[in-house]
Image 1 (cartoon, chains in turn red, brown):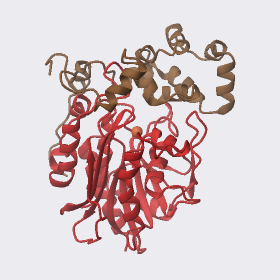
Image 2 (cartoon, chains in turn red, blue):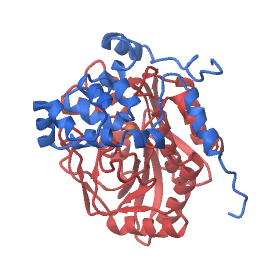
Image 3 (cartoon, protein in one colour):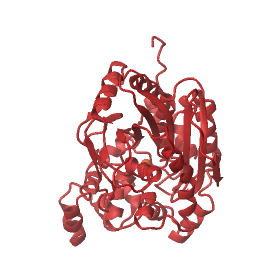
Length: 297
Length: 139
Ligand SMILES: [Fe+2]
């Protein structure tokens, strides 16, 4: 039986990809950010921690989906996915290799569970999907596991509610657990944390909001399920709404407790506050990384 | 599942967005207004279109059903004006990427600060939400 063994959150900002590409990931500005990811990189390479499949929840930033098609929840069911050209040429990273059997199984299960998914059999993946892979797996010739890209609309309003996202995560968990193959599956929730990329209010960062969000992601997800969009907009900036995607990850970890294995929080990463966590559902028992926390903000 | 569903009033939901200082939320209304502008920006995902655009921006823009104000906003790289015309930052990112500019550059350009001032503000922890949450409430 397949099972969900961990949830990871990560920023997916393109500037991180650019820092890798330009060889500036060790400089004064980016060095601390990449250092904050080191424990995640090491942890995931430990025996038992490398997933067979990552369900990677992200938002497409007007790359695969333009103004003509705006699916609220989509699932990548293709054999592979190419890196999108977002205006500066495609990020030079390996193709993302999917798991069509599991992806279709999840799609079918979710639809029966009343989540009416959009099924993508051909799709390019943008920085939202590939930057977290680079941050956590570095620069290999091919990605070390399969990835099911799971785009969520958080661009055109209204995005899905936090509650809907959380429930979707719960249904993803049930779908994975009904898959007969013995697979180690992780769910990654990407994007965030507080940031605003537009208008005179651009640059907004709200550390108190972010740290409370991380706390309740672990301790009180019920509060976050009820948080209306306007609260994200007011408190976490117009692009902070990406955090609803973290609730899909959290819902997928189940309704028992979760254990926080690692926390990284950093300001600033370009325009954003960055949060990267490793969470595991109760009862999995993987050892944490040697460093448990880096909060440098 | 049989619990009575609490419905959100769409009018109240949308009206609240106008109460956030310095922010334009990408609602259906803006998405309709900016459809052609955003699709123009999407076209810059192809290298040959980027070349053609950079070679003669005006001529390239004239191929699109975009308002004159929006065309001027693009020519001036005035991102606030583009957003006023229904542009969305993720679509418009194809334009500043074509210019080899970053999200930080584009975001900074909308604040009335210099790039240096904006970068400095971010280094110091970003813009505080204090007084930036609500126009009416002033908090
Ligand atoms: Fe994003």
